[in-house]
Length: 62
Image (cartoon, rainbow, N blue to C red; front, top):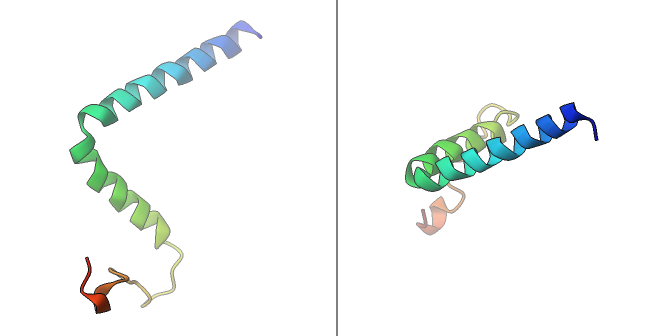
């Protein structure tokens, strides 16, 4: 392996460790933000007028 590839792999590993630590410490604050991001991406390609906020609304769940 070349030295550049080793540096890049080390950087990715260190970044992953830091990201995991931050997610562990701020888990309660991160979950709603991540969920909003996932929902935004999920509904980006949906046709207009087809947004469903809760799939179980008719059951009274959620």
